Amino acid sequence: MNDAQSGKAGGGAGAGAGSGAGSGAGSGEHAEHGAAYAEIGLECPVSCLGVRTIGDLVQLLAEAGRAAGLYGVGLVGERLHEHERVTPACPIACMGVSERVLAPLRRELGATAMVGEVVALLLSGDLAEVRGMGPRRVGEVRTALIAEGFPVADGQW
Image (cartoon, rainbow, N blue to C red; front, side, top):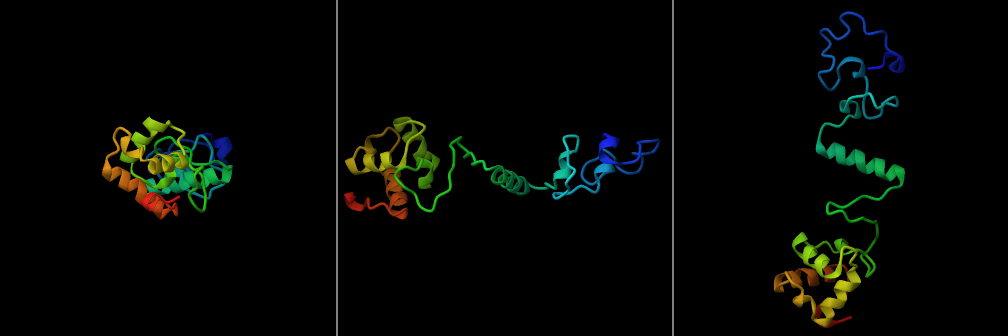
């Protein structure tokens, strides 16, 4: 609570009395702060960000990332990228398959595996040979690739 930086009058006797100072959102010298407040600094409590829910926090972080020109990081640590359609050069996370499919693919192909590598495995018939990939998971991959426009139905390419 740096009164010189905040422009508030000194913290004399009773400054926190009855005001709920330090009790959280909307209290004390930070009561006027909100999500658009221009003077938020490192000394401000989290309540000054105007974040009340996890959804608010996610939105704030996404906006900050866009404003800074950064890309997001996926829940599994993969770098995400924006695109209009999935291409063979996309990371396998772009296929939209479950983690139960992604984990065996990462073990087999490595952390930087691309969609094109999965297509090649599928078309060669070797996808079913990957440890942890049974018929159901192979079907999930095939369905995801067809949904993204890859002609992999019945071995087309």
